[in-house]
Length: 268
Image 1 (cartoon, rainbow, N blue to C red):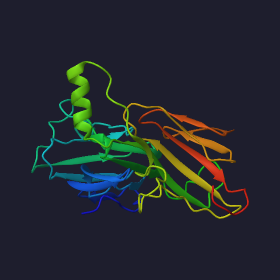
Image 2 (image 1 turned 30 degrees about the vertical axis):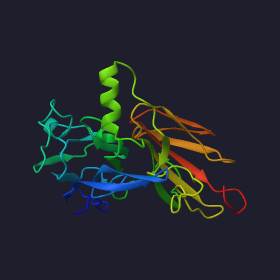
Image 3 (image 1 turned 180 degrees about the vertical axis):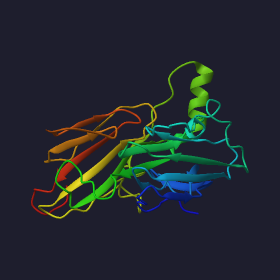
Image 4 (image 1 turned 45 degrees about the horizontal axis):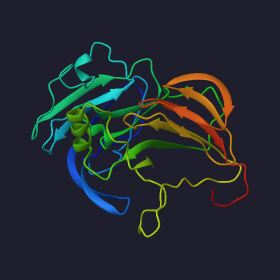
């Protein structure tokens, strides 16, 4: 089943049935089983429009309890759809399902969805892109194209072992073995098919980058060599545009920035 939907619009309802499953993923020249949504890491992105209703039935096929939090989405009289396990809901037990039913009211922009139990959000996460109502433009020039960039982390060991060891010893958990963009670390010699994450652009065109920090505990810096980024939105709120060459994004935070591909054609 798929989690991705087109931008529905006009206050319509989008129905989705994401499935939580184990899949082997290869990173840093080795493989391990990880918890995923629909077998993907990161999970699929959700697209909707302001005033749309999302009806999402999460089916749990793994041996962990599960819950999904819609980070930054305001729950108006739908607190049971917020997702924190043992707070707004009982966790979804193995073999069970839970229906999240909520409407995106008075919000548009970039959000993050992620698991909200144990350390499963290390691999169970994705973007929520809420577009403005039909006919409502952005308060900045329309970009040529949009792209979601999810910053994350990768551990060679099982993430539950990492946090359990920290809890036993009373210290901080070990740092990750790599940072990732859309699930991929940078290019690694002798690792076939692990060449990092690439974004193709056309010279002279402007792109809207929806940047999300899905790391567990780390604030991350983001920049693109030789380019300025024009920040136009932070945490799904428009801001007075400003230019910078480096972004600092905290865990769970989102930043939308315009990138103009103004260098000669080549590989950066």
